[in-house]
Image (cartoon, rainbow, N blue to C red):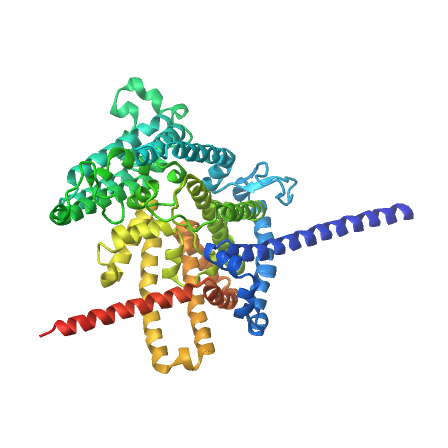
Length: 637
């Protein structure tokens, strides 16, 4: 009996030791993942990666990143949070999700996309993955087929264009080939539902060509766009009537069946198609106006050939450049059709016919960065089920400490998701010979300003909004009104939901407040001479301001993209009633973490040349303003 008892105790100790070893190894893996992610996210920035490839270790050595100040004051905060706080929170969030049936139902058993990435077998399932995000789940399932199609189609397009390079109509072939690929891609994606998108494109094209150059062109384009976005909403009655059985005959109702609707519902592509059609319509309108204003000068300078096309805005210009093949090729451009990035019509046309400079992006390095991002995204969704927690409503049950960590981890995985989506599309476009804007210019952990964040998040959409909404309604002269209108359209374009409307209005409010506070602080600092007399103190004050902006950004983006108004309200209610002291402790910790990270952000902007470019642009603007003032004073009576 004694020997049996000893053996039983030994077995029990072995089990406990094994469990402790597994827990320790799991914690170490989480720590390594978080720290490696922080470094990788910075290296995914094209400008910083290019600077490091060019300058090597000398760039880091000349910066303050390896100084005693950073090693002693700032890196401890970064390492503590990414090496201790966030990994521990990840383990707690995983346990919380496994213990909640509503959350656990979104953890599906799926084979790994990356062979060397596996899930922690916390409940005996080695292949579980967070599948609560529908967009990511669909993208992940179709990624192998999408990559094969991208390689095949881009190679075919490049081969055809190389074969026809000597043809007299080679520029037209560049358009037609991409148009045919886009039409085929659309038919595969949406099946019979493609008909409704074709109707939208042809109707928009006819309206744009008929009204171009008139006062009705701009209002009509925007009204049709707003109606098209409203018409695709499934919760509104209009969408229920846009079917083959309602519009045509009941005998065609079989085309409304899921079997004939392709891979996705056609309504899911309306938003991006509308952006491209708006770009076509507004660019066509501006081209006609500019040609009309300069037509007499151009004709008097030299007679134009019968088939010549005047240059407008650096593109082919003129009404003939805005034909139906060009419109369809742009609206249905296959690499960017599903998720973007968004490319303006004139820019797309210039690149199709080879009238713009070649890209500065090295495709090989870009694909390597993309592979690393996919690996970390796969690992993140297999280790931390933040999307399942948000969708199941479990976020509101978390305390301030765990809730704050969940917010930070969720936003980082969300950033990684969008980065992978957009970079897969852009890599395909680069292989096809088109260079759309890079949508994610900076890592999520490399932002300390609300305004600059939106300039670097979904960059192509930001440029589209600036060109077609912000500048036409007044720009900097009416900044508050223009910014509010921009975010109102963005929230309406994403989805007609109260949480997105609140998200848009809060962003506009924060940007306006940030501009006022930053402007007043800059004037006060310049009066006191802080930037020159006490640069170290000035940098610390800027880091405190940047930390505040980051906390506001995290809160407003969680409202818009994750938990909504109800989730953030329940979280704040818990923080202000049951966990007051813990909430204060978390707020202080958040400032410490963000303060340390902002110091690193400042130095990264020195390395990648951001501050140098901003200084050059400011000097050029000041010189231009001075020249204009001197010219006006010399002309004054």
